[in-house]
Length: 349
Image (cartoon, rainbow, N blue to C red; front, side, top):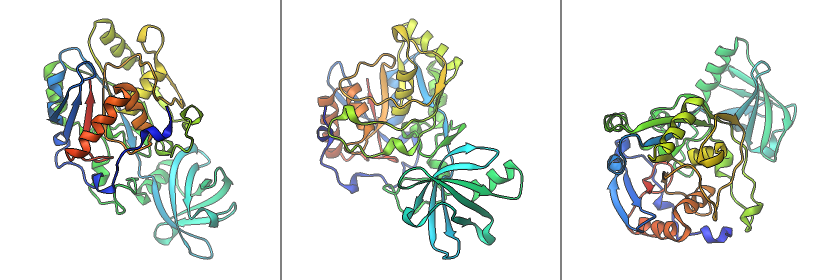
């Protein structure tokens, strides 16, 4: 498959700027791979398609407030920092992106907060926009982390909305977010409400949790026509023993495994061993899934409607079938589905 095959008629007006008032009341397009049929439902009706002992697999990563605003020493020029990952807890080293990058050089000091509450020194260049910072702070690690995150802002993608609002701190997060480390939310999981999770429990639908800390590489532009030459960024993931055991038991007993989002699907396909079973593991995978690809674990998946040419769209097309998914996206546009982070969802059976 080629990059150019993943374009479609897109306009920014299709993107949802705000989520549905209630998490589980987004629209849900149901695509059946076996029959080719498409249904239009409400997300909370997803339980109609599953029964006792089926297992939904969720990503329990938690988004941290990764965007900071500060000033450069001497000139006072305004700068924006996007925290990517902590490199060394004791030395308070972080990988970040900086903007404007051309003015931020090794040795520069950056100041954040009122009265320069937090100071950082640039100690290395990593990419054209990437830098390694050493934060200077009088206090213990917990005090430093609290200060850093208090100064930070919810990293809502700019293409959703330029201005972050207080409500985004809670809505740009799943209700089961537990393991801090993501700079972007696993958006398919954001449709699940506590009420819906309770209804799943009553129906006997099982839950398993894996962790994949979503990085900015998840949204990196694919700039090669030959997809086999694209390299995904590595992202930390964890498949605990409990999740592996439940998923494997579900498969052995002939029940359905449902991947909630592309991050879960990528995690399951990374951890798979013989016979479609998965094994407990952790690491930094960079698996890139696109057509043609033979999936081993999940029987169904939930995903939002993704941007043209995105790696997420490529994975969804690989699972649902390229022609079927591109036609479904055409129907979604005609039917007024909301695309993107805060948009509606698709269930592929």
